[in-house]
Amino acid sequence: MNAVNGDLFGRDGAREPWSEWLGSGTVLLHGFATTDAAAILADLARIIETSPFRHMVIVDGRPMSVAMTNCGALGWLSDTAGYRYSSFDPQSSHRWPPMPDSFSNLARAAAIQAGFSSFTPDACLINRYAVGARMSLHQDKDERDFRAPIVSVSLGLPAVFLLGGAKRTERAQRLALIHGDVLVWGGQDRLRYHGVQPLKAGCHPLLGDARINLTFRQAG
Ligand code: MD3
Ligand code: FE
Image (cartoon, rainbow, N blue to C red):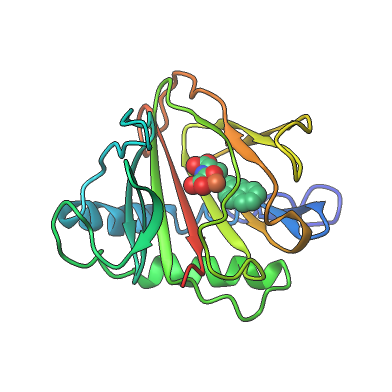
């Protein structure tokens, strides 16, 4: 093991995580979730037994192409009344499943890497992209306090992420997000417009033809 060839690859040949600053408050932790991915997906399988993925509708009644569910004290909802956080899953009328330790430990460790030592997520929105699913440019502004970062974990098929500016009209940068990548968005970058291009077909060893994204928020 040496500085030339040793530090990118661990003992098992897997890439070691490395981080890249994309903005003053934004860090991309490449491979940060790779080791925990299988445990996270096992916990996710239990979450969707009680709160399955569903296609929420937007105000005009059209369903989103991304299927969603939540875990944690609060869950993000969209329906014809608009966007909001709620303690209850409207489909089961029970509380959202609790956030597993595998989820919250990873999110907090990632936030610490980005300098947010007191991040305590109370909401985890779970997005499932099938081939062709996309998310159009938007801001995340349904949370109470924008000083808290958002931590996002990408699993399964790769996606092209669009990172715009503070205004919708600013041109967006494209960024590849692959299995195991974790992004922390805070500070100046917290309210940037962002989206995801239509998912391309492929087959991931753990997730098949899907991409899962977990977004951790301090919503309440
Ligand atoms: C940049 N999800 O759930 S995660 C969302 O990949 C959402 O499913 C996308 O946007 C996905 O709201 C992107 C990365 C992300 C999340 C929040 C951000 C990027 C962000 C907030 C501000 C700026
Ligand atoms: Fe978003």
